[in-house]
Length: 138
Image (tube, rainbow, N blue to C red; front, side, top):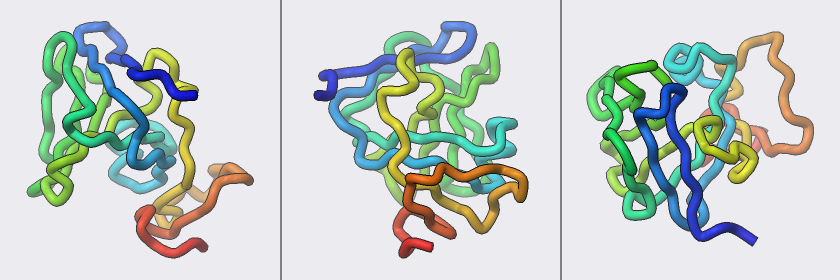
């Protein structure tokens, strides 16, 4: 059973947020943009309807990597906490690793495998997509 809400935040604690209900998607992304934004080999995301997301403390800073794409991070410690895109204005993506309970919304699919680092091991039980989660399975 899911909790009514979950909270998370950045490394230094300046950014805090709350999500309510279940995510519309939970993915493990291997794209080059996620790798560069996070410094990791992949990023786990939980996508929520915008009205199910709220800032509890300072609002995070946004960096536009290209028109309509915003990476949301803490302006003090640099932690990547979210992602927004203008083509999905009703959604807010949060980095699952910034949740207080990072196990709460495990990924249900691995995406952007065509950009995966060659030495990275995939999760054996998750469905795979060469690009976004809207593509057919591998």
